[in-house]
Length: 465
Image 1 (spheres, rainbow, N blue to C red):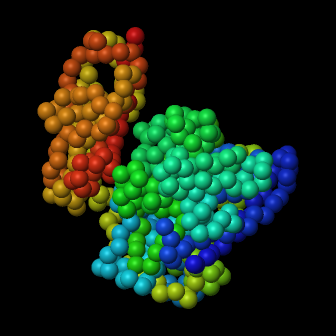
Image 2 (image 1 turned 30 degrees about the vertical axis):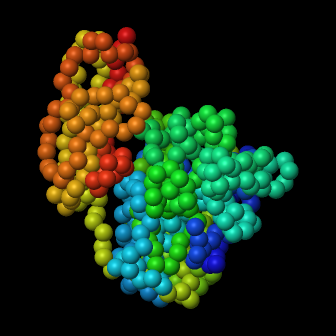
Image 3 (image 1 turned 135 degrees about the vertical axis):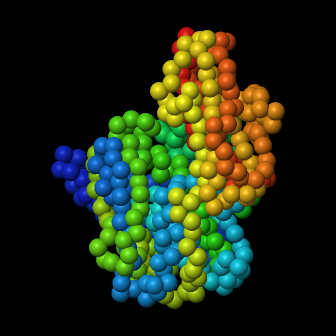
């Protein structure tokens, strides 16, 4: 077992009860192991705390967080490509499935993938915690994979994997444990991303779980098999094995950061929302987050300091990621594609890409989609169009007709090709129920008939009574 440490220090304003405190948490990446939680939660009165990246002050803005590599660090040159790849992954915020890969062409069998570990630690440094109990809980063995929580009134964790025997799943019996994991209220599935990600769609309250669910589900790999998303695990889930890589995000990772980005009011699309861009600034100590092989951790660690903006929101002030030289590290030598070369999908409602389209019954509605495949031109893909309506979910079928379905219906399977101005609906709204409609055009990065939404865009319109 390999361990690392995170030291978090937070200060509060004088008008808040406690002026200052120091939190020591231990994080572990295990060598032989198996929407998320935020940093700085250790007590019952902190369970609703949201942690934000460096620079957020409660107002809507575009945050830039600088990331550097200590010039004095061993492996400084070797780290650069992997760090840039990890930065690019967080900047794109694309949810993926099948992100656990064991392939000696990617990572040699006996080595630890530096890029995967750096991706995880960067997540900590921008405010994200472990979805699972992890080693800081004091749990042992597989018990660390239960969903993150703090003990209830009985002062201990209640751990029972339920009828399915899978730790971290929906039927876990947790007694009076207090859940810390923000879950998708619609389905409690950490591998599916809600159309809207904020506190109207994600919750940590037990009463908001779907009917029949006992506890919040976390993004552990064993849970992914149970839910039909094989070889998938949240990047922020504690645990990685030698010889494997986890270089892309799962839906739970994306949801947790987007939840924070919805700001103080916990609502997407309001004035306190922010965007986040991590910016690589080279080999320097002068950055918001600095990575170094300084042997200050047993394996790898993110040390952060933070400050309360109010009693429910904390901002990270600075972060330091430490690695230990005593392991066989693999440094990815291949620079990943920047976001500008990734596929871009578009969808317009009456020529608009935002939510400004308001229609009266009988008005004409036109939906038009487009795809710019970038360097993935010709790669096999699945195409999907989903309509969330007042009557439920509808999907565009292969016959270019919208059909009502509680499960995804694929519109097309084939190579990614460039097109624009493809009309998928041109109709009057007579008979449309009044309400809000959200239409999503998604293209997957594979052709397996599983709704991954690798590249997606949405448009919302309103039909008045």
